[in-house]
Image (cartoon, rainbow, N blue to C red; front, top):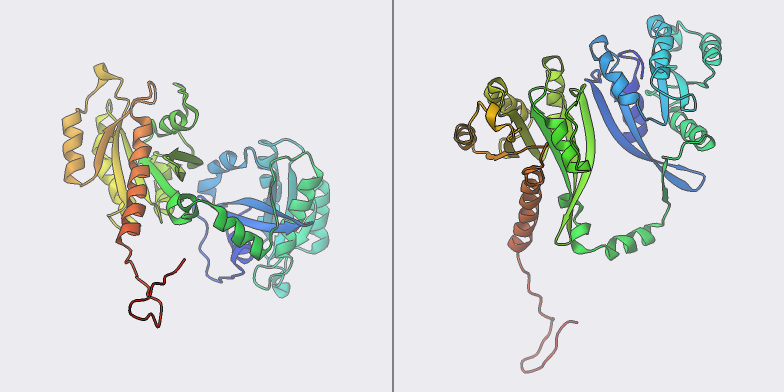
Length: 384
């Protein structure tokens, strides 16, 4: 976390991909990456959230700092305002976390020595007053970038943090053997992951739909999503498994600009309206346009009429919604998170579609027949 343009995304790009881009655009809302880091003979899988520093996205921070294991607060050593705001970011973090969460202060762009306005001693004094370590780094020349995350991992290992994902390090040969031992269905990683994005107006029940799917519970006092939520959910049927990465986007107008970022590279869209709210139905085509703005229009899509249990309050009838879906060449289904109606069927629509796609690709692959060289007429031989 930290102010806009201090170089948070550049640090991540250097750490994750060993790439630096002088013209990197500011983060919109939040970005998320995973990266494996080796430490003391173990592989640690880090989930790193890059939070936008612009004022308009500050309200999102509370959501993403909950339940974290560590926080890196970044400022720009050539920008005094970003340094002054370190205390703001630290207080925002402290208000949402327990005292044992690991923290680190990073002074970025240390390669710009002639433009420096914050001296090392000044920043170190602030870090000491906050009781956190201090490191200076440069995404441009790679100085201390790896050390930032290695320091975090080592310090987290010393605390009571138990959520570090540790994977055994295996040799290349062992890795190949492990991969060969996996069944054909699960080995096809391309078809076992599916990114789904939920779109629709605020309060149509997107989060309630997800909670019914993943926890089989319903809470009538749901609060609107702030920014975006992210969950993974695996569905297994007939020895076939698909892990869904599901992005639950906020429907409020002030977060509308974020949707485009999360729609990119989606494998499917679930566009939801409330059958008791005509305005949410009228906005379906607008959400569909947002979905396809960053994707081709052949991405699997479904319209969902939610809250179908509220029959007495219904204002959008099934035939009306089905006609709109047909006109847009998308599927239509009605659901109720309250009583569970058709909730699983929504996601099975994507599951079955991906499995069918995989099967059709396998059957359409050309069969190549091999004959042994030099096979003489009348002899019998073959391959085992």
